[in-house]
Length: 208
Image (cartoon, rainbow, N blue to C red):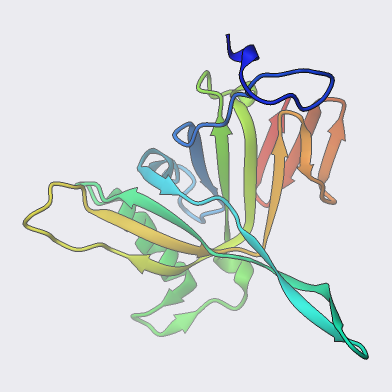
């Protein structure tokens, strides 16, 4: 019945295309030193997660009576991820370890380079079926991630909501791949037919 709704786009075909649904997604972390086996705690406690946003600087070029614009440098905006704060303190423990990697506040020392504390994040939209590669519609892979802000929430006598931990994450680059091929081509992305294999940082995903 859905084929009789919508507006004809080409060749007289009508119908509404099934949209991706917000609640069918998964977030995975990679490259967290010493936390390989525990990184899944992040995945299982996610409540909300942003997908990437990109902004380009506008560079004006002035001429006699007018001006035109060209694209300048781009910036990947920060993303926010909200977690439930569990009673076993698993989330705050993982967050604390990552914050400590970035700066050892107690001893007042820090790492020599970004590669010593940066990690990877993948945000995948799922079909709702199995969790194999065929169950992924598309995935964003964020490279060079680090935490810029941690919000440990607050107590509230009038609320029954779970306590949350909100991370603001800055990253250097994002790659996008999906079941239809490489959605945002990059040097380490290959597409052959309907298969796209994408490797981003410490995260590898193959969509068939």
